[in-house]
Image (cartoon, rainbow, N blue to C red):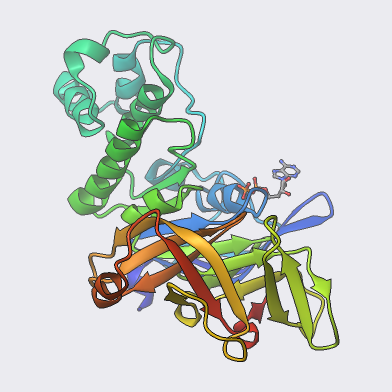
Length: 342
Ligand code: ADP
């Protein structure tokens, strides 16, 4: 990846609120025209990172390069190229048409305005006849979010940052927001960074996923995070007790850390437990989703194990051999030594 391929390059970023560090990112590169999914529990720093990428907030320390040049927050030039859509969309207290046309009017680009608004509405699955004259408060959560998205798409931003865009929308809106996001990338090469709790939706849209936990981006790709509390059983091991009494055994960390990562490549799936003496973690759960990864023909499966969900990648052969389908009971196996502590 050369510098000219990059939309963003973050170097030695630290961000504090008061005296609390909430982001600590040594080096993060985001390629132009890519769609990056941002995963992580509440409070892990996703919104803060998006605000820094939107140049709406200044990092306490470090530099953000945008299109290869160091960029400063609040610069009007960059802020017109980069746009952030939040979970609760902000709409002007005007009709839908005015909300969508607003940006173009500000820019004095009002040629074919009606056509452009029509197109923008269509991109998010809203019909002009029905919606253009609606007031901002006559919209469902999903429609309001789509109007807010159309208001941004009409400006063809270089970067679209979406913070939990489908958290309070219906399934149809979630699909349309996904479609509109992909269109922005495909039609004018927009770069997108999207934070979402909906793993399945995020996975269906992003070509790369970053996991963020306690302000650290610790790995690329979707991996399994197991959070504490852990109980020390001896010098070498810890256990985590799940709500249903199942126990996960993990090799103890060498430093003070509280989060374990089990990579999906280290988890295997079976229909029955192996006899004792083999693998030391054998957890019983059921498949909650199976998603086809178009790029490699593999299937990403999410398995629910009481209060934990784990993901792993399966081949079509494994699926047919074990006759796997959503709802099926399975056993996940991994070695306590395969844990990575962050
Ligand atoms: P996420 O989007 O992953 O939920 P945030 O970036 O919103 O995470 O928050 C990261 C941490 O920063 C949390 O501990 C949150 O309480 C704190 N935080 C966020 N915004 C502020 C703020 N304006 N002032 C003080 N603390 C904040």
